[in-house]
Length: 87
Image (cartoon, rainbow, N blue to C red):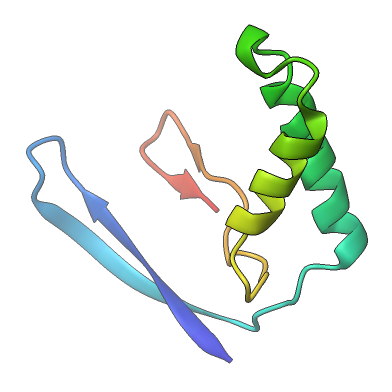
C-alpha cells in the first residue's frame, strides 16, 4: 500500500485542508494502454500537420509513456456546487 495526498486551497492560495488516502498501485493492462494510445493517435492525427503520420505519432506516444505504467490513484475529480470534491 502507498498513499497520495489531496491538498485543498482557497481562492487566495492558502491551504484549507489536506488529507492522505491509501491505495494499492495497479499495473495497467497492455490492452488498456493500447486503447489509450489508439485514442491519442486518432486525436493528434486530426491536426493538419500530423495527418498521414500515424506511425511516427504512435511511436512518439509509446516512447513518451512512463515506464512503470501504473494506474494513477485518481482518475477524475468533480467539484460540486457545495464546495465538496469527489475523487
